[in-house]
Amino acid sequence: MTLDPYFEPASGGDNAFTVEAPKIKFGAGSLPEVGDDAKALGMTRVALFTDSTVVKLQPLETAKKSLEAAGIDAVVYDETEVEPTDRSFKAATAFAKEGDFDGFVSVGGGSVMDTAKAANLYSTYPDDFLAYVNAPIGGAKPVPGPLKPHIACPTTFGTAAECTGIAIFDLLEMEAKTGIANARLRPNLGILDPTSLVTLPRPIVAANGFDVFSHSIESLTARPFSQREAPENSNARPLNQGANPYSDLACLESIRLVGPNLIAAVNDADNSATLEPLMFASMLAGIGFGNAGCHLPHAMSYAVAGLVRGYNAPGWPSNHPMVPHGISVIVNAPAVFRFTGPACPERHMKAAEAMGADISGVALEEAGAVLADRVIDMMRETDMPNGLSGVGYEESDLEALTDKAFPQKRLLVNSPQEPDRDQLKELFRDSLRYW
Ligand SMILES: [Fe+2]
Image (cartoon, rainbow, N blue to C red; front, side, top):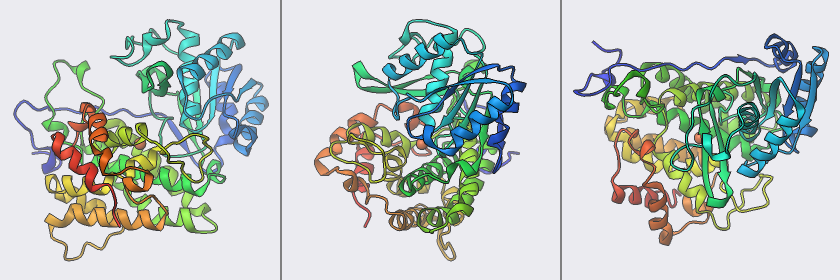
């Protein structure tokens, strides 16, 4: 007897899954409560992290006023970088050490929240920079003890950085994206206030909405936890534990919210009614992939982002070629659904329906294709690039893309159908253009 036939016990497979639940406050108008929340966590002098854009916006002012009204000293640090590096993490750490703070509040996107996590870690437990960085690049040293309290207040949606104990950055000398991952890095509280999203540029809303959708569909269609090899001991269960009944709940609801709201959020003159469902969908997706894990679209996205040549995304405040994360993910997704559809067709069909596809009379064998077609329609309606060719790649890049994505084993094995190298290359080929 299992909760869903998808989780049928397998010989040698795991028989349990764990549930990680971040502490979140969600609601329009909840950001002004940050001062009381900080006080309740014992903060008296706060490092208020933001960036050079958000520092001029309403949410930062709201947070600062609220902290001061609660009798808390708040010192603003707005020098975080949009894509943080070891250099910007070190600069933020120096600020945190000098300021003698007893708490952190971050107001901004994933980069700001991640920089606050790193500054909290290195100022509380100073060590060689690479000590805490993920292996094999760093020593993956466990965080020695609790960090200072941190409240994360996102002004965007999609990354779910407020839910995770991960801080991502570029290590400049190796030109590699890596991170620090430890549960102690997870903020004590995330305050999700949809009114903080009103100034988000539309192209960013589109890309982040597709990232949310992809977190959800990848977690929903991930290999079932019961087919992952049982861990040697209870502490060795991986973060990417596979689809499970808990993440299923969050993911399907997240897709059901993205489906009817994403196009309106990008194209309607007044999109304010769509921001609350999208931010909630993002939170649900964060719970979903935090407990199940992503697979192929994300594995392929790191190659797409890493090998970029001349692409500059319209609407992004970047002065160097870059494929924004949500775009680097969604350009691969339709090709992936056609490939993974047969492995768990019911799940692809449910997702297609939740995204708004007409599934009446559609045979189960067509589930992956129907989902792919629906996503392609939505990409066109929201001005997303036309697959890999839309972000500057061509046939001659397929080998290099495959070489860079194939080592992402942690993500590849979480797919319901693990591709071999040739199949992965074909997935990149199918992603070249969709219309
Ligand atoms: Fe993502």
